[in-house]
Amino acid sequence: MAGKRAFLLAGMLALCFSPAFVQALTVTQGGLMQGQRFFIDREGEEARFIQRLIWEESMYALRYLVIVQRLGDDGYYHETERASVYENFIDVSLYAGSYRFRVEVFDLVDEFAFSTDWQYFEILRALQPELSGFSPDRFLLDADEVWELTLHGENLLPGSVFYLVRGDIRIMPRRHTSDGTSALLVFEMGSLIPGEYYVYVRNPGGLDTRLGTFAIAFQRPFDLNISLGFAPLVPLYGFLFNDFTLNNFTVDAPFPDSFYALGAVTRISFIPFKRVWGYLGLELSSSLTILEHERAYFTANTFFLNAHLGLLYQRYFFERNFAFNLTLGAGVTSLMNFHYTYPVGPQTESKTAHYISAIAGLSVKAFFFSPFFISAGVDFIHVFSPEQPMPGFIRPFAAAGVRL
Image 1: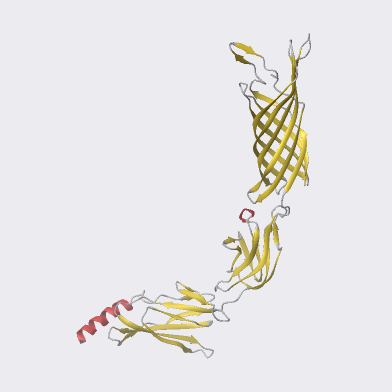
Image 2 (image 1 turned 135 degrees about the horizontal axis):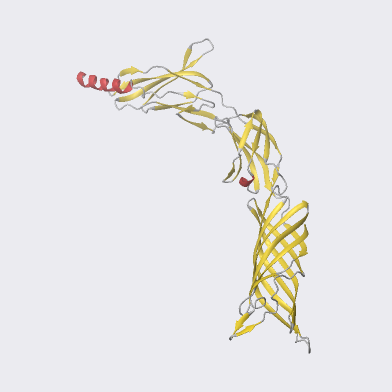
């Protein structure tokens, strides 16, 4: 029996005197021990920190006796905790101060084997953060240019965590600074999501608080833009603009010119859906172009009408002084009062024809004197006609308007 105990004790000494047996403790704010575990007990009236002291487990140990001492004002250490445990850790709740602890190891027959050296550590007092207010109380995504939030309160520490929270959504600031009584949070516009939020603060010790309500919104729930401008027509292809061959005969296109200047356009856009990444809405555009072409033996005339409804994507840039617009849609292209006149004889009977057409447009708005703007862009329109080949053209435009 004595030989077996000697063997066990030798094995324990070889393991327990190794450097890894007792992990070094470095304690920071709020009872957080670097490399250790802690949690906060919130069941009482005040939050209570629970620290877990951990050491390397020994396969030859039956139990451990843990002794914790605190440095007193008299310069001596006084015992605050003494507990026998069978695991390789102990949970304690210690106040701020300087501490040391050691572990006494008992072998498999429950006799004292040896004691580790004292391990010294410090626990700093955890401070409860308090928020008394913040400014501004909202970010207006279509009006503000700076996304900075200033907090006021107590115990807003440099190592604290700050963010906006709404349900499962957290918006973290790009950077923040704090000096104890105030904090400055700087956000990226691209991270801001409309809604109502709490301002949340968690100190390094794990104590936290929040204050509401902070809003992220748009100043205008929707935009209504109306503009009127000049819109010439540039033919591209199709039976209206290019001569073509039919049954081995060349058919003269009625409007083969490369540019028709007499045109006007009206655009009305309604934008109810706004996000940081852009605005979505609908745009109604209509244009009227006078097409006339004179040949040696006839003159072709018509009023060329286009009306389209499309989905509109809009994105502001340069501090919202400019807006990029993309439109995709469909509508109707009409030839109104289409007829030929001849040098000799009466003109042909007037005809009207309507065709389904598709539109894709790009434009830029400039708000030099908001809410008034000027815009310029180009639309591509393809006409789905039974006559072949189907026509297509470009409609550049320049306009002036107002945002309501």
